[in-house]
Length: 78
Image (cartoon, rainbow, N blue to C red; front, side, top):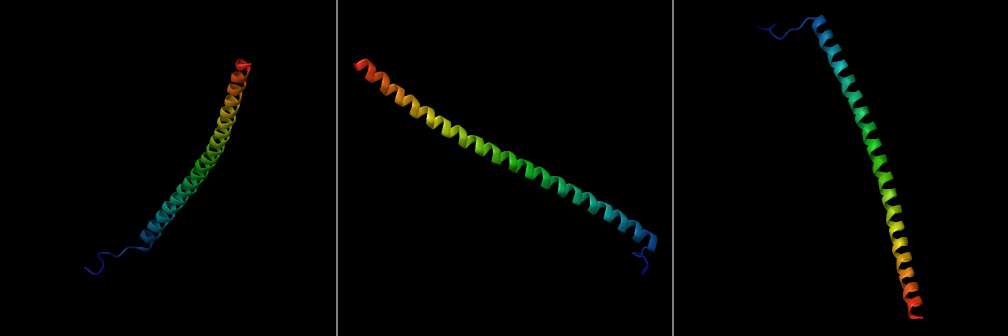
């Protein structure tokens, strides 16, 4: 009964080696996940910047359109 949970030195080494391999795999997955997250954040930043540029262009075009509208009204009134 006392030796029921007893493991040999070779079993302990084998289990320890397997656990080390599992830890390495998990660390590799974490590194890959971090790299994916960084790529996603870069994409988000670029899309935000592009969105801001497009908003500015829309405002510029709205202003230009309004200006042209006033010019047309002014020309037709003359």
